[in-house]
Image (cartoon, rainbow, N blue to C red; front, side, top):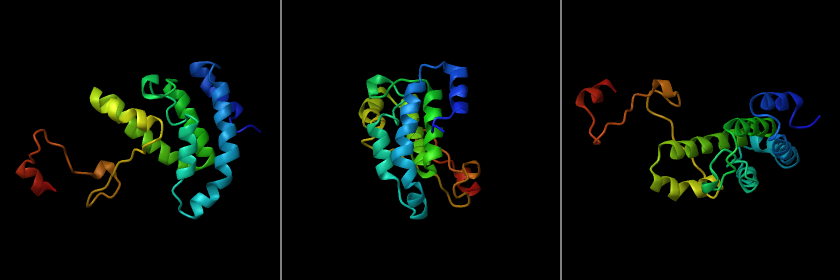
Length: 165
């Protein structure tokens, strides 16, 4: 059974046609050959999947949906989502790591100034830098919905908010 399954193929084709199947098959074969065999070791050893991330960066998987001007392939986001599903099938740790990285890239791309995009996106999209973010707060841990921190224009916190925290 191929790593890029018939069900996945049908789902992708329903939305974007069959023109991306070869790329997804290529990614699936790479993951099956290079990433999946090391997944158990990565998970059981609590190892950050640096080698797998570097491989996926070299092969362009990380930058699938980003514009060519930043080093991406400019494919539909759905193709990137299908690729992440394939990565998840191979190694959940690697999948979560690249999904977080791409969340950072998407934030810079969607909300960053032109200067910020030009400075950071090429190296992020190519995997030369790894994007991350911290999500924790006293009383909420990693539950984003329970966080009380807020950004205030001008950098001043209203005194009534300090007491609420």
